[in-house]
Image (cartoon, rainbow, N blue to C red):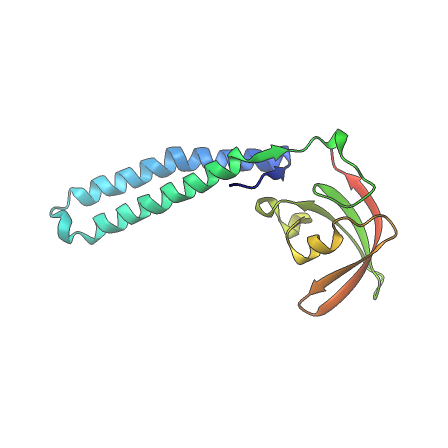
Length: 159
């Protein structure tokens, strides 16, 4: 049984593009490698052929998993989202209680997480600590350096 994952339109498009690339170019490249290896003679002692067949198996496994992810993906409608509490696709502005530093993050699915772009995974320790909190709440995050406390300053939805 698969789990439904929520994505931005941009995130789902990236997944679909990757799947298309693997199904077309990826499969063509593997077929070419297998054909080249087959042309080199006896298949029973052909390491290149074995490697190409293994690569084909891994590619098909990746395609299968990606098809499952895309099949269970849902795009969230921003107009129907609640900003009273932190949830997926919310952009939350937080302040470190200890040093007063403020930062904003958008909570996304694991596949869309990109710290450089300010997108953190809902499943990360940081994401788990923020989910369900309201403006003014103190969120405790279990970090490798210990527990950190952040005050929720603002919650918005990116459109």
